[in-house]
Image (cartoon, rainbow, N blue to C red):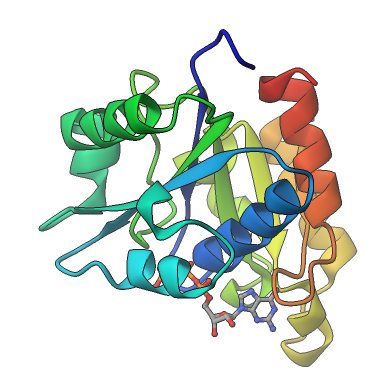
Length: 204
Ligand SMILES: Nc1nc2c(ncn2[C@@H]2O[C@H](COP(=O)(O)OP(=O)(O)OP(=O)(O)O)[C@@H](O)[C@H]2O)c(=O)[nH]1
């Protein structure tokens, strides 16, 4: 994508669902393929997620920016995304080769959604340990995201969740829009996430 603006991809979802783990997996896959990626993290009042990504050793730390939301994450990813837009513009100016900018939202609830002024595409991450009734709650994040990632599939047997049923119910409430099951600790399913991004937003 030499002559095009970098794709801006949001990653939202409940606290602890595995958003940062997914970011780390995506950085590794893009890095291994010599594809250029940058990251913006949103935390409430710290830069903890950004520090963790910088420490991973998987990415040039200069390509990682932190936005401190200072309060409700909805504000900075939906109502007033100006801080994130400015951070993305800066990263793009500094690293013109950037193909993808990942924007990780602070952990929130099932209602978080991204402004289309901020992102071209957004992923919502839920995890099976959150319960198999999550799709039935019809949260806007689950229903409206471009790609639903169902993470921590390894935990399904341990928390009494029928993964197939959860995926089926998620498919029903999403009307067939894409869903990818993952284990963001081991990397299971990450290739399918990248394939979906390539098809839907990166066009490679
Ligand atoms: N078993 C299992 N654990 C996972 C998986 N993905 C992430 N975790 C673990 O779940 C915990 C939370 O993961 P994070 O990536 O920090 O989650 P997050 O959504 O970024 O969390 P916040 O930023 O606090 O909202 C960590 O201890 C991860 O190691 C997975 O697929 N399986």
